[in-house]
Image 1 (cartoon, rainbow, N blue to C red):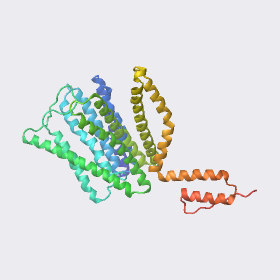
Image 2 (image 1 turned 90 degrees about the horizontal axis):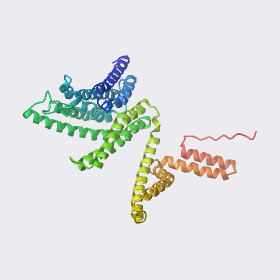
Image 3 (image 1 turned 30 degrees about the vertical axis):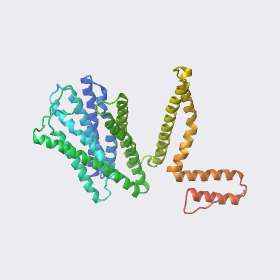
Image 4 (image 1 turned 45 degrees about the vertical axis):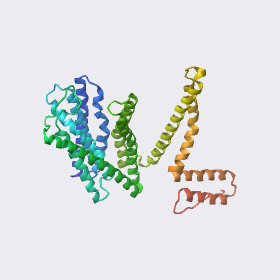
Amino acid sequence: MSARAARRLAWSLFGLFVALAAAAPVLVAVRDGNASDALVATGIGFALVGALIASRQPANAVGWLLLVAAVALGLDTLMSVYVGRATLPGAAWAGWLSSWLLFVWLYLPALFLALVFPAGRLLSRRWRAVVGVGVAAVAANIIGTAFAPGDLEVSADRPLRNPLGLQGPAGDALSWLSAAGELLAAGTLVLGGLSVFLRLRRSHGRERQQVAWFAYICLLALGPFVVLALVGLVAGDDGAPWLEAVQLVAWWSLVVLLLVGLPSAIGIAILRHRLYDIDIVINRTLVYATLTLTLGTAYLGSVLLLQLILNPLTQGSDLAVAMSTLAVAALFRPARRRVQLLVDRRFFRRKYDAARTLAAFGLRLRDELDVDALGNDLSGVVQETVQPTHVTLWLRGSR
C-alpha cells in the first residue's frame, strides 16, 4: 500500500468512527435515554492517535490496531443503543452484533499492542506463536458468543433471543469453546506483559523511553484490574454497598486509563511529543501515591484514636475530625519532602547523587577564594554529574 493510500484509509476509518460516535447520541435522544449511553466519544483518543500513526507510519501495526479497535467500539456502542429501542426492526440482529464486537475492540489492543509496541514489530520470530494464540483466543470467544443458545447478554427493554443460537450438543460445545478462548486470552496477556518487560530491558535510548510510557500506563491499569478481580471474589452475588462503590470506582478508573490514558501514552511515545518527560511523570506518581496513602492512613488512624480519647469529653462532636484535618494539613509539606527524598534515593539514584553533588559544590563555592581550586572543583563536579568525555574550563581575564 502506498503512503497516499494509507493516509486516505487511516483518515477514512477515523471519519467512520466520528460518524458512529455522532449517531449514538441521536438514538439516545430519540429514546429519551441517558446520555451516558453515548460514552463511545471517549474512544476518540484511539481513533485520533491511530489515524495519526497510521497516516505517518503505515508500516507500524500499532496505528491500525488502534483504528480497528476504535471503529469496533463505535459500532458496538451504536448497536447497544439501537437495541435499547427494542421495537425497531432488526433489534435482535443488532444485539447479536453487539454481543461479540466486545471481543474485537477490547481484545485487539489488550492482546496485541504489548507484543508489537512501539515499532509495530515482534521481538523475534518466535513470538509469532503468541500472536497465533491471541488470534485463536479472539476467534474462540467470538464464535462461542455469536452462536451461543439462549438470550443475548445485551442491555434491552426486553430479552432478545440469539437469532443464530445453536441448540443441543453444539450449544454445549460452544460454552467449552468460550472457556478455552478465555484461557488462551489470559495466557496471551501474560506473555504480552513478558514481551514489554523484555523489550524494556533490552532497549536503549529513545526506544526505552517509548516502552516506558506504555509500561507506565499498563502498570497503572493493573491496579484497578486487580481490585475488580478481588472484589468479584469477595462480593459474590450479593455484595455490601461499600464493595459495590469500590467496584464502581475501580471500573471507571480502568475505563479512563484504557480509553484515555493508553492512547495518550502511545501518542506521546510514537509521535515523540514530550517523550523524555516519562521520568518526571513516574517520579510524581510515586511521590503523590505514597503521600496520599501515608496521609490517608494517618488521617483515619488519628480520627479513630482521637474519637476514642475525646468521646467521653466532647460527647459526639466533630472535634476529632477537625483536629485530624489540621494535623494532616500541617504534615503535608514535611511529608512530601521526606517522600520525595525517599523516592529519589530509591528509584532515581543518579538524579539524587547529582543533586547532592551540586548542593555540596554550592556550599564550597561560597567559601572558596582560590580561582584555581574553584576551577578544579567545578571540573570535578561536571565530570561526576554530566560525565562528559572531555572537560575544558575557560576563565575570562581581568580586562
